[in-house]
Image (cartoon, rainbow, N blue to C red):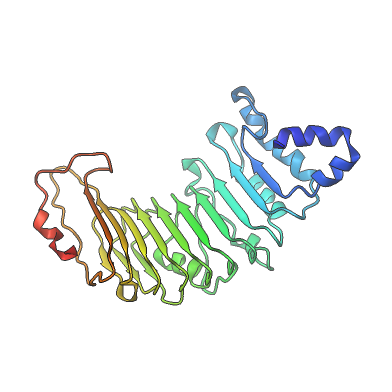
Length: 285
């Protein structure tokens, strides 16, 4: 039942009201809140009212998706997360407008005291995230997606270093990443996607069971070492007109490779530049 209809039903049924107060799936979007474009600024009041009537327990899935016209204050967002992220939560999705990228810092504190131990899926878009050394709040995490997140290579390392269950890592448009290092003890990690992180220069992985690597962006150095079991390698290089572009040095042999896809252009739909040094691709072959 849609969120808005559930709230209406709770108004006329005591039994439904009791179940609503422990509703496990909270998805806050304009659509689920029943907001029209002219009511976009009511987003905050609607969410406040719903969470006010919730029991603070039993939430399994939490999603916040809004844009600039919703005009959500970061203080409200922090209070919502603090209330809804409780022990037992499994999935968190936070989709913010671009302007929040440096304005909003995702609070690591909401994951402390066991509240993050049950999370298996975390998806953050357009915010800052700065885990400290020793961060170990996401031990059940299997899928991590970061899009437009302000996070350094060291902070990404702090974030995933104790995610022993991690199977899939996606990093998109994270402009503060210069070097990304995947440690060898992430033995379940099988899929790595890195795309359009323009400052990135090195991807180094020692994860022993990495089988799929999908990369798109400026040429980087790939150092895979123990990750030489890669079977599916997809590499796309962005192209800047009148600039010299070189394929990165590959320091490993892909002895297990079965599928290799190399794309050259500004994105996956563009034509290949005639000035590209195709012989530089020999390092893959």
